[in-house]
Image 1 (cartoon, rainbow, N blue to C red):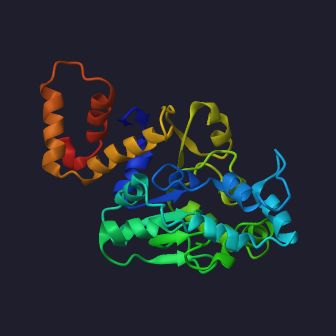
Image 2: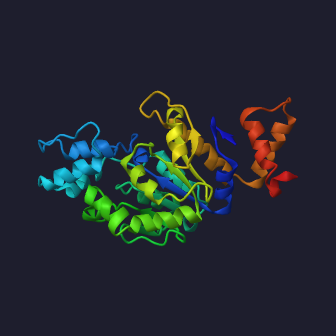
Length: 303
């Protein structure tokens, strides 16, 4: 179904309705203002800016941070000082991604971000405590609700954050607690990636835990130039076009905002929209046509 120009597959919409969707949020969610936190590569560069040790153009961020650690830089504490910025506030997208779920007890949101903005947004939205897990003390991937900080949170314990190559090695290879969680989660739930690019260092590790395509569906917002990379991972791309301004990825927030309005609209609101479409001059096109097609698959809207 087309929503603000982005095609949301029926499998994604059905997973949300059935309560079988996990939102998987990356650093791109916390990058635009007013959150204004760096992406992982920018974070690594800020941590190493006074170390005298430069990051190579093609060097993975975790490896560079590992080299800084060996040079004596307290990488984890430096990350906490950067990310615990008192001027940083949750973005609308933090709230919208939580609003995809109808109640605090239905939230399933996993993030590799180290900031605590999802916790802040959850408190503002739901007004009650949400189940929250911080790596490595995480729940079963096949049966959980709440917020999961898969790589830790600087607001909880910076030393446990998955930052350097050794941290990633423990999380995904030797101790493999992240891999076990993700393998079970991908096998049980449909997953929507938001705030990642195909070449993020995080995606390179997540790929180890992705089960074969054809089990539970996986989706990711992306630009057209990256389609082949997502297909390789068995992830269905939700294609958008970057815009101008401070946040070129604003179309993601706009489409999710419209989706949330539809999710939270009542039966009478949905019926009124269908009635207005039916009363308009034929043929309906674009988003109206897609809305009618999707409504015809829903028993309560079919009449």
